[in-house]
Length: 162
Image (cartoon, rainbow, N blue to C red; front, top):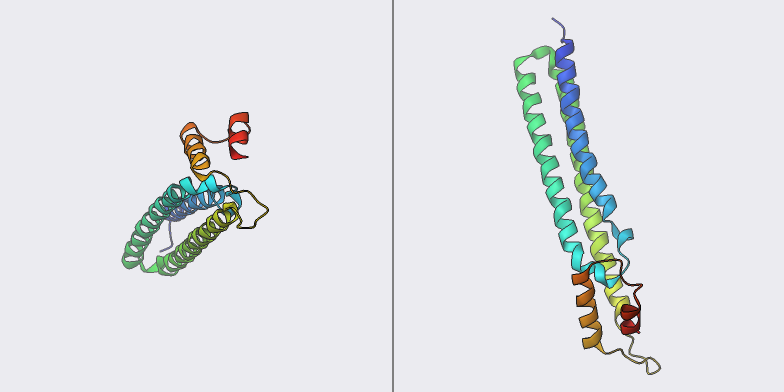
């Protein structure tokens, strides 16, 4: 007895669902990767962004495990689909390992970039540079974070930072 078209379509649909969940995680990683960190102000949001990526990864893993369980059940009940199910399970496991590695690498790179930006934003201790008033600058940064992004071009922010 051969595998029905309906069964093949079901397997393809389930694999497509897993790949779709993977793309959601990958998109989130692209949206908040180390290249998107441009200022010390990004440190305020990076932990929330990384947490959101982790949540998307957890959703992906749940979906992948659900589909693997369904494929294992199908494999255990129908001998002729064993090879096909094993192939799809292996593919899902490979996708899962790749997406987990991608998220881990991104998190490490983002943290390193945040550390670098923080170090670069700290005033140098050289005698020729005048250290800015840290309390005023901290207050302006706090105001900036409360007002929202993309306002650094306003004269009051630029003059306060100088």
